[in-house]
Amino acid sequence: MRFIIEESDEVIVTHSGMTLVGLLLDKTTLGERLNRTRLSGMGKPDISNRDVAYSYIGLLCQGKTDFDHIEAFRDDEFFTIALQMDSVPSSPTLRQRLDMAAGKAGWESILLEESANLLRTLDVTLHPIVLGESSKRRAYIPLDLNVSPFDNSGTKKEGVSRTYKGHDGYAPIFAYLGQEGYVVNVQLREGSTHVQKDTAAFLRKSIQYAKQISDLPLLVRMDAGNDSAENIAVCRSQDSRAEFIIKRNLRKESPQAWLVTAQQHGVCHEPRPGKKVYHGSLMCPVKGLSEPVRMVFDVIERTTMADGQTLLVPDIEVNAYWTSLPDDPDVIIRLYHDHAVMEQFHSEIKTDLDAERLPSGKFATNNLVLHFVCMAYNLLRVIGQESLKRNDAPLRKKAERRRIRTVIQNLMTLAAKLVRHARQSKLKLGHGNRWFPVFRRLYLTFV
Image (cartoon, rainbow, N blue to C red):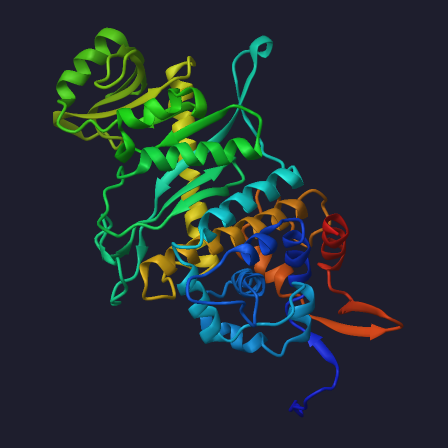
């Protein structure tokens, strides 16, 4: 069958989800705060800072990061109405405004603060980690910090250099709150930056943002690259108090010496012939700290492989963790392994939001862009998590967290017809669209 392609006078919308984004942004003071900032060398702009920021957030919530993508929305009546804007900037205006604001006007802090305030206002559900016996239950909200290199190979962008992953790019650090993975802090770094550089200050700020969102105690989890007394001191500090599990960097410590220590202080179990696993803990002094820190260890001695092959020399694997928790070593090790879920959050930012190859050639602008990305990520995460509260989505697979790509594909890009009649505006979704009940419920929830 052949089709006749014609242009319609009706207003057909391909991104109905912008109404949800607009409702969430309306619960913040982001626009007002950005409008109050003054950019050097510019008087009162024709297009407000609010409209520039909201336009870019609208792009990002559709998985579009390039500044040129805004051109498709300049004459889009619905895009303007949904995000409650006066006008949509051109691509050069968007780029120039972000260049002017980057690192100078405090937009990065405003985005992080408003994001935290929104999550608090919405009282988002954060599923805690519950530890202890039934009579002495303790609940913690995980705060996971990690660096995730962005591959920007083949570019000449400012700050791009060799990362520890072996490619050229950036090495931003993220802080995610809860098992849901809301971003509470982010910082773009040059690719060759050491993972621990300025991390203590970043950790302190991340804890402060996290405490704005949740009143429950925090559990900080960090990788071996952040094995530093500075980080432990931050977690022990009165103003940034948090429990912690930080993997130790064993550096040049001998595995054989560790095996002796494990045999003396650990509990051994043998899951199969030829494999012994030792778990235990010690109180150890740490240079730069006045009090010793509990160290949990996991030492594995293999004399035969799983297929039965005998090893001439035993294979010794050692893992150790600093922690402030009193729980059994098995619990500490399991909690640290759960820290790996943040790789999924990294993936959603890089691929679902298409943010790995940042759009500007200027480092400061890309840092600001990354803060906008994280604001959009949190908005989409809120929408996704709210959609899970009832079983009305046309998806059979049960989930505890809705992936960002699923939110964009099924809720942001819903097709509808915009109808204006009797001083009312209506969005009419197609008959039989099985996402209609979810979309209407979300709209009524956020309105």
